[in-house]
Amino acid sequence: MSELVEPVPTPPPEAPPPAPLPEPEVILRTQGLTRAFHEVKAVNGVDLELRRGEVYGFLGRNGAGKTTTLRMLMGILRPDTGDIELMGQRVRRVRAAQKQHLGYVSQEQVFYPWMTALELGKFVSGFYPHWDDARFQHLLHVLDVPKERKAAQLSGGTRMKLGLALALSHRPPLLILDEPTAGLDPVARREFLDILRDQVRREGQTALFSSHLVGEVEEVAHRIGILHEGRLRFQGSLDTLRQSVRRVAAESAPEPLPPGLSLVRRERLPDGRLALVLFGTPGDWATSSFAPETVETLSLENIFLAYARRSDES
Image 1 (cartoon, helix red, strand yellow):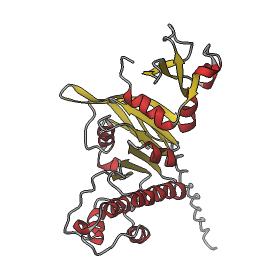
Image 2 (cartoon, helix red, strand yellow):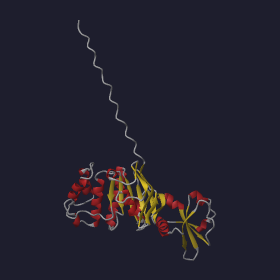
Image 3 (cartoon, rainbow, N blue to C red):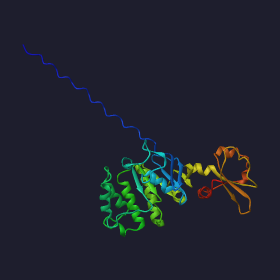
Image 4 (cartoon, rainbow, N blue to C red):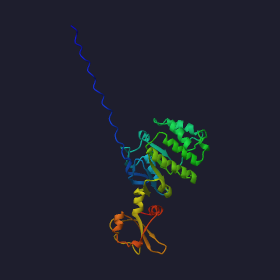
């Protein structure tokens, strides 16, 4: 009589791997970001919000606090108070693990002067586990950066393009660009902006692009923030800003202002009349008591100048 052989149980099917968590639409958020130097608040309670796949133009005159803000986002400076949320992770200070998700281009690209572009790529690759050397080589070709020329021999525009190639070659989801076109000639500036716009469009990256030049921000940005004296005075789309800020000629300032309107700045017109630059929603403007002939829409340049020249006593 043959022995009964107990069948070997079939192992249960492997569970499918967990679905990846959805990537947050908000890739970077700050809350109450503050940093002081010698009791002067260079950045004061800044709440930024950057969404995936957009260019965020960070506008402000020189000394407004833009670079200090970006250095806190890069972990170079520690905030006195406030939080940073990067890729859904909340931190007090950005550290090495978070920096893997960031690409940084500063207004002053400092490289070892004796290194060529290829040598710099090899050096920088050691800091990024996901470095893509084929991509770096491709970017050098596309950006027309000489591979074998020493950094000390490169023009300012070429150094900036080399910095961009280095920043992009580990495929970071967020680019932080601190006045990247400062000192570039018009041709180099045009090339840089075209590359930035194409990169965001094709790769779905997000870019925080600081500048004091309104025209270039207007050209590439989806949304903007205006920083003045360390405070974020406006954050939103360009269309919202254009529709919301207007100038009103008046014999005197009405007290109080119409509901929903807030003062940006008082000015004097050439004929001596008072002018008020005011902020409000289109609905607030529609219900205001101002005569239509006294209300003037402004260019983005003039809106920025109104914010940049304002004081807290305006």
